[in-house]
Image (tube, rainbow, N blue to C red; front, side):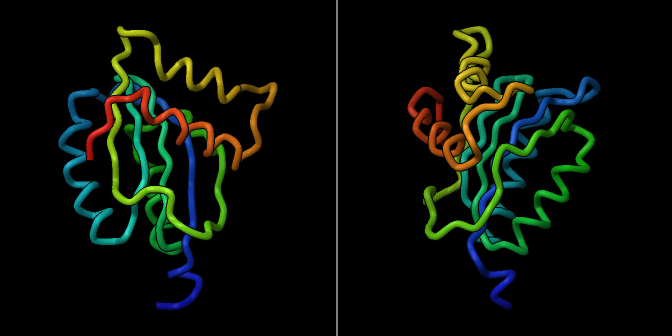
Length: 144
């Protein structure tokens, strides 16, 4: 494998569940994704609240770029917004984790988005946004 494909890389994005997609399909998709991610050396954190996705991914550059290309054209995602991407010196996640934020509990994902200031007025620069998101992991029901 070439250096370009094996160098460690990271992506952090938010998106919405497309209006014609059902949240009930997410668990089946995740089972399949987890197997592929494990096989391809991809780790990270995904938080879904029934309507919004927030995901941090890390892994080999070429593989991760291909995965992000698939996510970008996936009809179940809408309004995908990249918050950060770039090279990574070492992994921050040892496994692939799925977090679920109960949208009726406290608007947890909305609060995270507000803290990240994901708006037209700007917010934390990419790396700071990743660090903030990963520091908020204890707020979510994480399984992996």
